[in-house]
Length: 229
Image 1 (cartoon, rainbow, N blue to C red):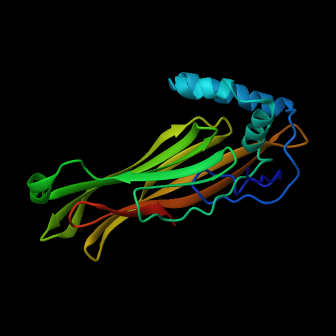
Image 2 (cartoon, rainbow, N blue to C red):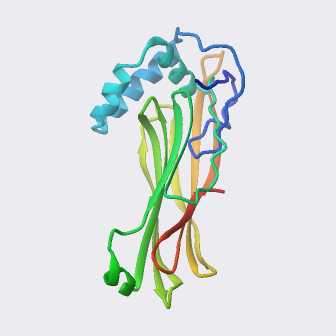
Image 3 (cartoon, one colour):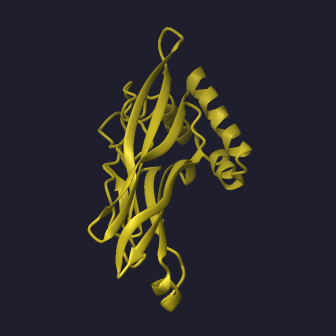
């Protein structure tokens, strides 16, 4: 079981994979009024997105898990995984019920058809979850031209927020640049997260964090790497 930190800092609690846990006392099982509201709004968001599996997992959480999740939403529990790039297609770092994962893929096309294609596509996505409930997910998808086993130019790419059920955060993803590096193509997206947390004075304090999410594809159409920088 991992260790969590209850703290008032908001800046680290973003969803883009720059998070780590520090030693702290055990999480309390009681929730404050703002925390209860956040939990209720989170469940509503899952329902509105048609995430029936997520709703079922949320309803099955015990009191300690609910308190821990609520603490994250209001900025008191700050998970922080040092998640960088990956050289494979999937990677997950977890501590207790919190997990940050990333996966990637290239087209399923095989053999001569893939080799003959002059436009390749690769994508990478990252998501943050609690007890198997997906809270947020962002994705980069890259289309690029190839010739002679090398990427020659970028045709197009997209930056999307696939999921945001977090009741105390807004997330945007926008193009940050695409280019050819050696024989590979790279697409980058700037992900910005604005998080809020209640103050002792009954107001909300807001902070903004950002990171660059990227994906790299080879001249043969395979996924090379992806993650954050």
